[in-house]
Image (cartoon, rainbow, N blue to C red):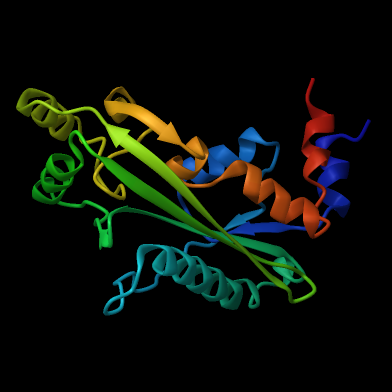
Length: 214
């Protein structure tokens, strides 16, 4: 059986174009430890009349290519796989913000209360051979009707900060979800089945991490 040291000595390197602990934890859940985290600083403002699914795909691409430029300047990351993702929440054509202010989060929660919305995650993989592979995952989520007390308590928790749509499904907001159709991990930030398929389909040895589990 390979040990962790020998595994890293020959397997291709994988760069995650994000500093999100959620995405790192999700990758680790399927046995993948990124070799580097290269968050990309891009403008995430939607273009005029841009649809949610188009925006998620475009931002995943832009994050991937921005991180690729950084990786290209590092000798230890030459010939790496590079993975990027972007998750957003929409109600119809309306794209909800990644809430940074309590007022933004409150507006999101009141809009989502008692109704269905969609979560889109775009995933882009750049391969060592120069190929670009993409997936777009749509998940439908429905919230219970939220009372003012529930909204105020959630806002006070701070669990919403920096989250698309003003909530984190892996946190306290899980108690708001009455129905989910699609990928739960995509709502968290990275659709695992589709990411696994992208990587394994391009020859990345996903199973290698599984062999070192005791």
